[in-house]
Each structure stands twice: as C-alpha cells, then as structure tokens.
Amino acid sequence: MIFFLLGISVTALAKEAREEFPVPPPPFTEGIFPCSNCHASMELNQKKRALSEHTQIRLHHAETLRWCLDCHDATKRDKLRLYNGDLINFTESHRLCGECHGNVYKDWKAGLHGKRSGYFTGSGKRTYLLCVHCHDSHSPKFKQIKPESPPYTPKDKRNAK
Amino acid sequence: MRNKTFTRREFIHNLSFAALSGLSLSLLSSCSKEQREDFLQKHFLEMTPDEKRALVTRFEEKYLRKYNKNFRVSVQEAIPNTLWGYGLDLSRCIGCRKCVYACVEENNSSRINPQSQWIRVIRLKKGSLINLEDSEHYYDPANVPEKDFMYMPVQCQHCENPPCVKVCPVHATWKEPDGLVVVDYNWCIGCRYCIAACPYRGRLFNWRDPNVPSESWNLSVHYLGNRPRMKNVVDKCTFCIQRVRSGRYPACVEACPTGSRKFGNLLDPNSEIRYIIERKRTFRLKEDLHTEPKFYYFFEA
Image (tube, rainbow over all chains, first blue to last red; front, top):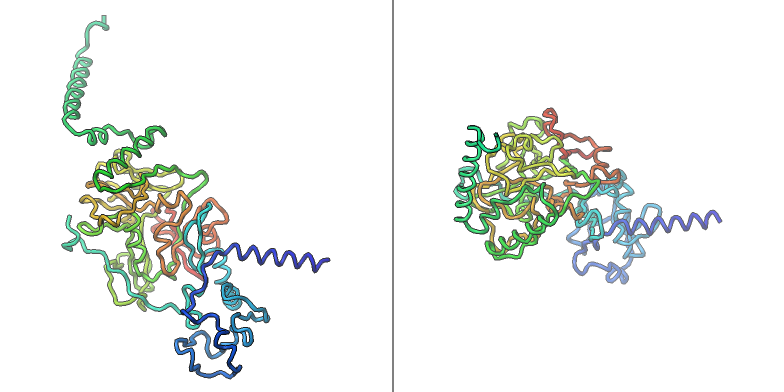
C-alpha cells in the first residue's frame, strides 16, 4: 500500500515537473535524430576512441573523465542514461545535466539560471529554454560572439541634434 | 458697499484675468484643433476613465494622420499588489548589446539623427567594478566577452525614492503604484531638470522627432511608455510598461542571449527576483544616495 501511494506521488511529481517546464524541442543537427537509424545496424564498440562518423562533435566537457556512453545509452540509442541507469528522452536532458551541476539545476528550476521568455504570469505562452539550447552539451563553455555596434558619440554626424 | 465697487487689487486682478483669457482665446482659436486639444489636455493622473478613453482615440487618430499607422494606444493601469523589480547577473553578462537594440525596436526610439538608446552597457576593468569613472561605453572589440573586462548594462533603475520625480517642476513624471517611474510626454516642458538630477544617466532628451523607419514601428504602445515621442521631451526606460502590465517579460529580458536579465514582482515571494534577493549576492548601483533602486545587480555563486 505504501509503495502504491509512493508510486502515485512519484508519477504525480514527474507529471507536474514536465508541465512546469514548457520547453521547446532540443536543438538537434538536422537529420541526426533518431540515432538508432544508423546505430541499429552498427556493432557496439565501447572503447574510447576518435569517432570517424561524428566529425562535428569535439568533446570538451570533462573529456578526461568521460565518454559518449556515460550519457548516451549503449543499447537504446534514442535515449539518454542517468547515473542510476534510468533512461530518459532527449526532451528531458536537463535531468541528466542536473546530476553533476546540482546548484545550477536548482537555480534553473527557480528560473534564475537559464532563460525564460514570453509571459511570466497569466494565460500567455511561456517558454523555458533547456540547458542544451544555450550550451553545446559536448562543449558547454560559451563561445565569444560579435557585439552589436556601439552608440554614436555626441559628435558623430549620425547623432546630429 | 463692497459688492458694488472694486478695490484696486480686485480691479487689477479681474482686468488681468480678462486680458489673459481674451488673449488665450484668440491664440487658441488661431491654432489647429489638434494643437488646441493638446494644449487643453488635463494631467493624466486627474483624468477620469472616460477622458482616458477619449485620449486614446485622439492619439490613435493623431498617429494615423502623422505616421499612417494604426497604433493601439493602451492606458492600462497598474495591477494591484505588484512592485516590479529587475535582476541582472553580472557574472553572465557578455556585453553584446543585444538588449540595447531590442529595447530600441520595442520602444520606438529614434535610430539615427539623433540616436536614442535607453540602455547603456558600460565596460569595466575586472577588479575595479566600483570605479565607474574609468568605465567605457563606446567599446568596440571584434568579439565579446573580452578577457580582462566585465560589462554592466545601466538603464533607469526605477528608484523607490526617485530624484528625477522630485525635481520636476510640473509633475510630468511620477512613480506609478507598481513602482514604475513614468513620463507623460504631453505634460513635459523639456526643462531637463530630471536629466540633471538622475545619478544613473537613465533619462534622455528628444532633440528631434523620432527617426524610425516606417516599417519598424511597434504599434502596440502604452501612453506612458513607448508611444512615439515628440521633439523637446524627456523619455526613459519604463521596464516595458506595455508588456509587463500584461504579464510579459520586457524586451531586453527576451533578447539577452545569456539569460542574465531577470524580472519579476517584488511582492510575490515565489518570483524570480525574490529568489535572487534572498539567495544571491546582490547590490544596487549607488546605494549610498538613498535612491532605493529596484534594479538588483547580482553574481552567480
């Protein structure tokens, strides 16, 4: 009975959590998903090596400690794998990130880290971005970008008064 | 006795009053209907709901004539139990100025001749954050963030104790019940006392009519916010009054690529801004002036 109740509360919680984070689909490179399209016919090789197929991926995310299959599941290729062995969809990748980055995950759930847009109250549409919308999961450090042009100085001809 | 004759003082009073009204009547009859209505407009805070509705129609017609666009002018009032507050994460801001240009587009600011930007991003050398005199806002590197610098966007801080409101001689600017400091551009006389009083350089003067490309007008405007300004008035950031009063994030929050900008209701214990104030290291700019800004800069970690 207790387990039954516990089960209900856990599923209720999970459902609530999903509703709480209206996130857009994860940003896949075109044609890359589902992974099983290619991987189904491939032999499993768990050895850490340079990948000849995924040329765009440069792992720069604690790469000395980890390898693809620490996050991606070896057999069910279209799923991500949590530390406890649970399989999750790519749409819930924030749970996987949160396993290591606990403090950031806590802030993200409160709406602090990360970005929210749209309506913050009322019935309007709101969007919360996933970790992977801003951070490349294989190389999460932010890249430099070009800034917008500076304001014109008071003496600039384009700023005539 | 006194009913029939005038004292000298009363005579002069009446005479000058008659002269003034005669003069203004002739002046008013010589100007156009639009100018007359503008001149005789009541103070916004003294208008009844009916008068505000008439005001909306009048301005929508005026903008249609002037810009050939169907503006939707709002006079929406403050939502009860709200006090808007802003948070900005200095450890994540990369100084890309995307917020500046999103603000310009949203708020119908003049693009060129003159250029009018409500947000100023200043660049500070790391380790000298408090030294604002060494800040630079014309920085233009190839890429940001630069290694030795940090960036700090400054805009109207929406003080609880706003010096700009105090100095206005005609009460053309005031603090709304939800904490937003707003300007009635039709009441402003352009004396610029408020610009001199603001310690944050949060206010700008319109030296000319706004120069906005015809296709770029944002037609959803608020009377106290982003409606087209005219020459010789002061304007400023309103935390996007036209957006936040309907529950929508300000334009700068939506534009920020790193999510450094946070917004929320200070009276709501579950809001993002309260989370920041309760859990992060925050500071407010020039706190020593006792202006009590509602703009909280904070650091991650």
